[in-house]
Image (cartoon, one colour):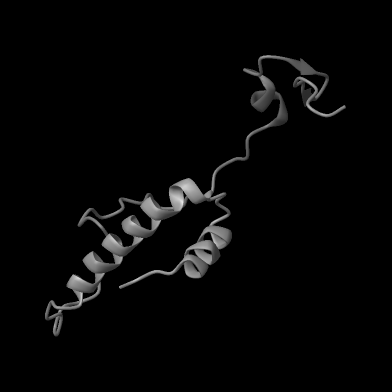
Length: 95
């Protein structure tokens, strides 16, 4: 597949890339190679093949939800590196 300059600039704009003229030729070549590779995939017979939904066969081992006592404010603040009264004290991030 051939990519013209207008298409390349539109793709660069959508990807928020600043593409200067010195790199345009290499980028066109790279994109054409990618599209040729993807086009080769269309040659494969995929009839009867299930779509892939996961990259592994691992199964999540989830724990059962159990209702427990909530964490008290005192216990929650016990290991705080710095606190002031009933609150966590953190460095100022806004002026």
